[in-house]
Image 1: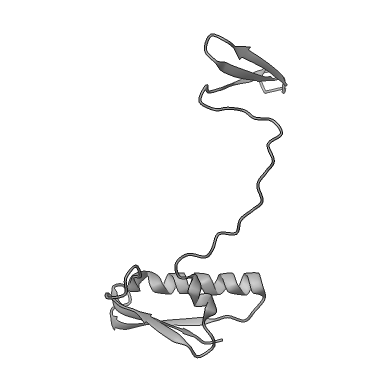
Image 2: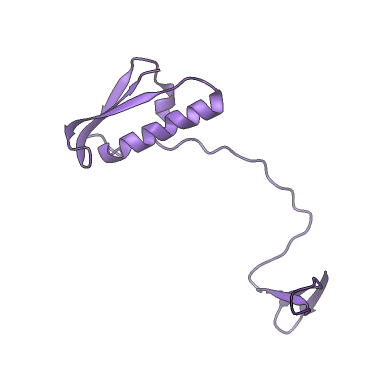
Length: 121
């Protein structure tokens, strides 16, 4: 690969000589706002803490909680999908049996007012 610089435009052009169907070289222009750096260490992977519902992974079998309109920052409608996602994540990452059950206590399943989660296994 050949690198050329256009001093007037401040651009770097990378030219590759790969054979294409038409047999012409492929060229790319790196925009002036992008800086190509060499030998930069890759930072370690940081596992993102589970979302705000991550505390569900702390439930013991038989424990439950509910979310209603008065629960700040938590919505009954998003509780069940989040709970099942957390349970799946715990099963996959810890090899631990972890199951939850979610129920609408008040309202409809498509528009719950109060929803609850139980750890069942």
